Image (cartoon, rainbow, N blue to C red; front, side, top):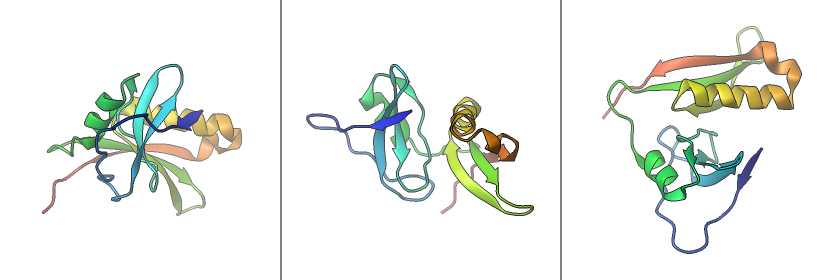
Length: 122
């Protein structure tokens, strides 16, 4: 279960999503997990233990040369796929895939994790 809440007091600036430019928000889940999630494309930053500032710092760290990301895809037809999120580690992608399967068990055979190597352009 994902819960979003606002921090009381001054919070660090959250940079736009590095994938789509969308707005990021602080998310809380499990017992102590905190991360930044893009409200537009559902990309997750690295999960950290109970430290909002650390989660924001990790989200704000931009793509490094040869960085890999893991994308969860749902196959909706023979040749069409729906984007279900971008994650910084395979473990995060697997956790998201497991959440979707738990919510909609029939989707299990239609979900995939693909690895992409990011490239710095510009």
